Image 1 (cartoon, rainbow, N blue to C red):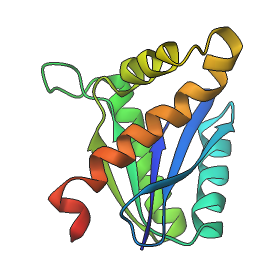
Image 2: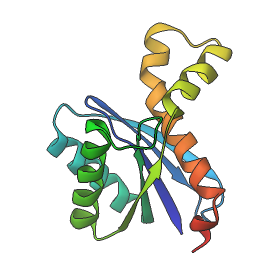
Image 3: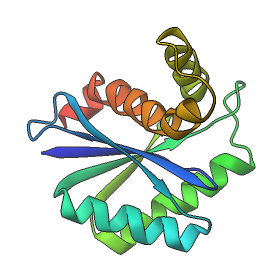
Length: 139
């Protein structure tokens, strides 16, 4: 079963999709959308096109484990995405994935606009990799 990870953002949303076995991160995408409804429509269409069986939405908790305003937006987005697609949608703790994505891109020499264009896809890949390595992914 393919699994899709979503790093939901205000302007750009990173997407990573696993291979058909659900074992390896495969394709990545960045969707540009300036409204949540537009992002929802584009992510839902991609999930259906890629025939994913589960969607993992990054859940940006605060470092103390509490859910702030951004986490609440992601929670609502995940709920709507599940209702729209009919695909099982789960939240996944994504603390520090964007920081790690910036570090990775810096290490490979990506700067400025190149980094800005790819950081969300890298963050989605990190979310997907974390999820795929968890026992929960095997269920």
